[in-house]
Image (cartoon, rainbow, N blue to C red; front, top):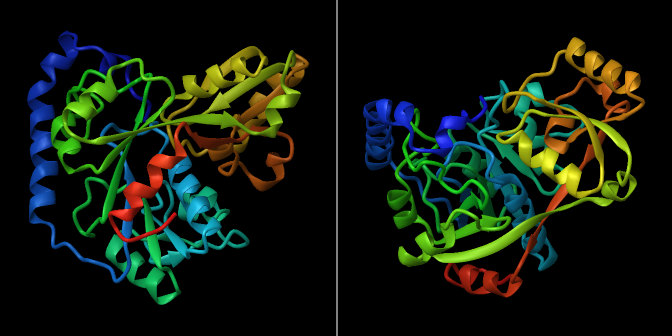
Length: 325
């Protein structure tokens, strides 16, 4: 789904849906309280969020995995595999699996480190440890109480924050921000903080880390070029803004629901649109892996990577769980 515009502000529709939001928040709290928590034999780092989608969890998880690999650790990544049919536990194989089976995020994670898809996360953790993991990084799962977390990082888009602060469906929050922050060890603010997240987190006594998404090397070829852009992510406008910042001339922008399963006709229509405008067709890495294999070569991709404002903040966090980074 795409986040509706009314989730940004506390208008009449949001207030009208508030009773349903209260029920949703109660159900999340009840499930956390009743969960039978499993503690793996290795530390677990959870990269989650409080709002639904679009915060930047996967780039943060990848950045942490790269840092751990660089110091000789053996991180395995654990995800539910949203959008895929695989129940797991299943080790993601880039040569055999596609997004329809394991989900788009799992494919991006598996390109960096061993990755497991498991709807029941404890099973994925057991499998990861059996295959040599000495630390597990969960992509999402902050509101999942079936597995114990040693370090929980809440990722927040600095330009969106917590939206209107109301729980789904009245707003974008999976739980009240104050409740989620009380369980967090740190908040990762991605991009400029335009919504006061830093002050809110610091008032709750939570460490705040700042980061930004840096466009990949493909950005150098976009300056002045006409592009037709499409994205099916939590907040497609973030991708379009990144393209503009790279100097691309956006002919059209095409927004699809998050995790959208592109059909051949979808892509062929977009390719025709680009050709008619003598433009390049471009999308995100997350969308690119959801395209049919024979169409990917005809669609350019703009990758991004996470860059910490102050990398020296990470070692003290990991010291809490006895891990040197």
